[in-house]
Image 1 (cartoon, rainbow, N blue to C red):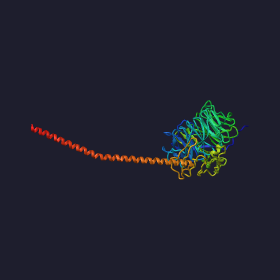
Image 2: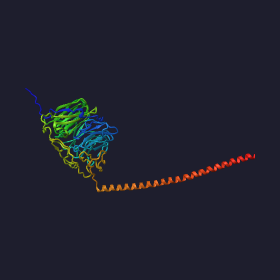
Image 3: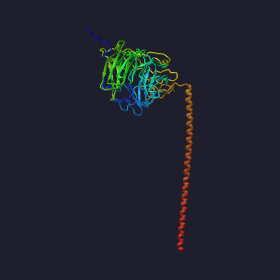
Image 4: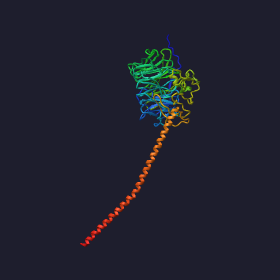
Amino acid sequence: MSFRVVRSSKFRHVYGQALKREQCYDNIRVSKSSWDSTFCAVNPKFLAIIVESAGGGAFIVLPHNKVGRIAADHPLVGGHKGPVLDIAWCPHNDNVIASGSEDCVVKVWQIPDGGLSRTLTEPVVDLVFHQRRVGLVLWHPSALNVLLTAGSDNQVVIWNVGTGEILVHIDSHPDIVYSACFNWDGSKLVTTCKDKKIRIYDPRTAELESEAMCHEGSKATRAIFLRHGLIFTTGFNRSSERQYSLRAPDALNEPIVMVELDTSNGVMFPLYDADTNMIYLCGKGDSVIRYFEVTPEPPFVHYINTFQTTEPQRGIGLMPKRGCDVTTCEVAKFYRMNNNGLCQVISMTVPRKSDLFQEDLYPDTLAEDAAITAEEWIDGKDADPITFSLKGGYVSSSVNKSLPAKKAGNILNKPRGDSSSSGATSSSAGGGNFASGNNNEASEGGPPAAVLSEKDLRTIQDEIRKLKAIIVKQENRIRALEAKEDARNKNGSDAAPASAGAVASDGKASESANDHASTSAGTSKDED
């Protein structure tokens, strides 16, 4: 007698439910770029989607309560000169978003609470280094204001966004970087490249620790670090069949699991939930979302179920666990962009009879606060991300936070209440160009104060004095020119009557001469 033992799992019955159309977002012109990106980024406050835009690149930012049909003239974030390729919300500040574009520039924006009232064109900071288009932006999981960017120039750069400085430059990739991911505490970095290899780096020293062949296919591959240190990859084999693999960092050449899925040609994006250890595979152009659970026992990656829709997806975003509804046992929330302009909201739930908080479904999740500063991280300190319990719900922090920077003030302070913070004017070091503010409505609390040294103040005062002297000089010059013009006009008016009198006297003289001539002629006739 044989029997099959059913694997015990809390997430064996996870199922997806699409919300009604009036609870979704409609009339969104999703970008038609061929770049392999999710085109979407979500956090508990906003939904950001890369859209089609004439005259440059743009993306739309919507508060979650603005559902329904979106107006065609809705304000955009549109400061790029080329199409936007990737966007990412800062995990430690729900109002800050980074964007990379074909114009080779990375821009960091600050979105006011409540959304945009008019189109935003002035970023908080421009990060200028890459020589070709920037297709990847990624925030550090635990260090404040640390941003990774990768471009088609094969360069990977790690920035301190608060001061605009380049912290690390990795230039050992021979071809385009497809994806990058930090591990749980941000001490390791995994990348995939067009040369079909997967690499692990020390992100502080740019030292290459190991590399191996990832997938044999020539199409784009993706790799992510799991919470306990393993690496999950997606790609294609030589027959262009899609596959996924699970690997250990110290044995990249020997996959623990390598499984073929199907023969579709869309790139698969692995979206990872570290709390439940679940992986959602979403392919570009697919109409399905497959989800798996990673466990210590074979076969290690367990297939759970598939969510099926009728429309193919063009982009997708995963809400952080802070934005999920714990009262309905929601463990994941997706935002799918369809080709018809609809952004569909999909809720993944675990059915439970009790209405109480389910602690087994919701372990402590990632908090909004950063564990360490950028300076501490680059100096060698590692720290796990700060976590907190969702029991009782999540309330966004409204306390104004600042990063004590040595060279420049932190321009990514959190806004107070519903106000929007504008960027502080500061000098750029290593490629960062800071803007004096954005073109949105001014905040009630005012912009964060700039940190200036006495030397900078003296320089500014000298420049103001020079400008005042130039203005006075130009005013005197204008007065002199006006006086000359008045004198010229006066002289011209005096000369006009005299010339008129001369003309009149000449006319009288000619008339008298004519009369004398006619008289003489008449006299001569009489004599004859």
